[in-house]
Length: 184
Picture 1: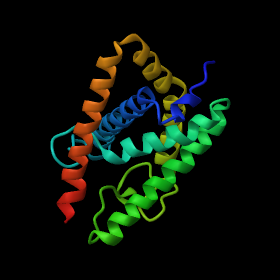
Picture 2 (picture 1 turned 45 degrees about the horizontal axis):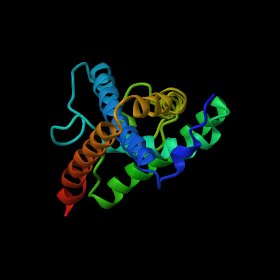
Picture 3 (picture 1 turned 180 degrees about the horizontal axis):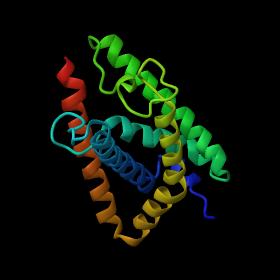
C-alpha cells in the first residue's frame, strides 16, 4: 500500500489542494447523509444547513481532522476506526455544546428527538453517529484519500489546483457568511 503520510506536509501546494478536496467532499457527503437520514427519520426531506449550498461545515472540518489524525495510523484499519470515532465524538460534542451554550440554546441537531439514538449524551452525540463516522473515517483514509491523490496525478496540475482551491474558497466564504458573520 502506498503511503499518504506526505499529505501531512502542508508546505506542499498539492497536499493542501488534496486537503481542500477532502474538506469540500466531506461537507457535501455530510449534507447528503443528513438529507437521507432525515428523510427516514421525519418521513420527508428536510433541508439541512443554512443557505443554498449543499454542504455542512461540521462534516467538512471533521473530515479534515479525521484525515490529519487518522492518516498516521493507516497501517491499521481498526486504529483508524478508533481515531475516527474519538475525533468525531469530540468534534460533534464540542460543537453541539458550544452552539447551545453560546448561541442562545441553538441546536443544529438533537439526538434526543431522533430514531436510533442509542448511547445518546445530552442530545449532542450518540453511538449511531459515532459508529457511522468511524466507518466513514476508514472509508476516507483507505478509499477517498487514495482516490483524491490519484486524481491529483491524473488531472493537469493547474486544473486540479485551481478547482480545489476555488471550491474550498466558495465553501469558506459560505461558512463565514452563514455561520460566523451571521451571529455577529
